[in-house]
Length: 277
Ligand code: NAP
Image (cartoon, rainbow, N blue to C red):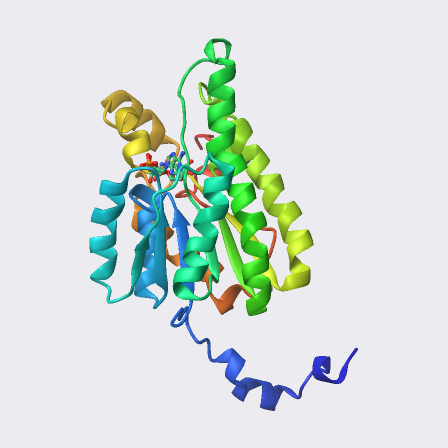
């Protein structure tokens, strides 16, 4: 055990500044959020900006990114819009460098871009497979690969992958989505193991059912809404602001010794066995 690892007397420890949580302050940090034009990605970008980070957002729809940027600017932070299809690996590499060159650093990467096709297994085509894997996992993987060198130069980094409750559960009619997200869980662990050498923490968030454009058609049908909510102990779908706390935890110094983990944010769905007393 090195000198700096020696346990200190408790009286001194109680006064140490590291126990006075600097909160989740991200002043001076730069965060890139893919899928930041709307929904959960935009919510996470707003949380990061409100904590002091300068922001870059990426997705395919430039007009949506511009509207999101206007909102984020209201926090007083700087915003860079980077229209990108994350299924295109050279474009993903270019996105990382555009952000790092613009701000001079990149400390936090959030992989929130994602798509879903809701259909029975036997109807999926090879094109469906290729598209969903390209957007949900290939793009995230190469973004992480590319950002490593940028974060290494800073001596630290935080990567947050937006996974899903399907890390744990099988849900009917979304097999390809579930397979892609399952891969993302293992990707999070593999990256965490190798990137620890550069003090880069890699974690995932597992949202349960959130009401966004992705799920609007589903939640707009009263019977589907009722059936979804009936298994959520907190009795409602999630909304983007429900991810703010966990985003700040995983993006800030508060999580410096947490890596390779998934934090589920699901209103209790995962621990509900569905048994009536
Ligand atoms: P959403 O409102 O549909 O947002 C998806 C975002 O991803 C949009 O900004 C979209 O912008 C972007 N995107 C899609 N394809 C892209 C591509 N090829 N390149 C770049 N960006 C792309 O859905 P959401 O619910 O916020 O989902 C965000 C993330 O949360 C996804 O990874 C999703 O799997 C995950 N999630 C959602 C739920 C839920 O219940 N809603 C639950 C668990 C996990 P463009 O279309 O303009 O590109």
